[in-house]
Length: 152
Image 1 (spheres, rainbow, N blue to C red):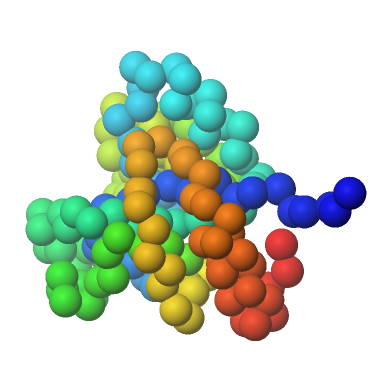
Image 2 (cartoon, helix red, strand yellow):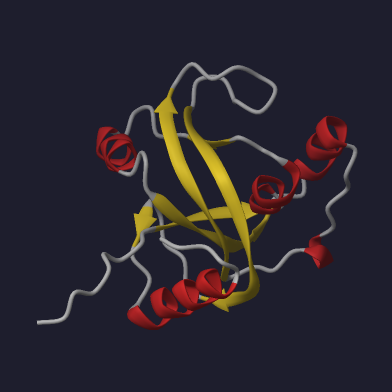
């Protein structure tokens, strides 16, 4: 019997929010999960684990001025890869009382730590909530991270 590593779960995040997490220090991902106990429980089970950051195909144009105001960086749609796993982070906490400016009121706050951008985005179909990408995606992520000196 082979000891395969446990599969990593992924979370789809709209751009440019994913880029803000990986490149600009955005410490919180906001979710409208307060009335979804199953999704909150799923998130809490991931605390302390590495999560794949999947950039969804959707781009949030309204995020651009908000991110620019907080960071001084303007992220253009053309700067973002969409429909792919673009990085990883460790989910460090889940709460509902995060502090602005990144934490949205009346939402669940997923605290992200140790973000790492992959050198080569891996095309992948997203899903709602946490989801498990197929074995090919898992292996490609692990290979890239190993090449970057990251051990999971």
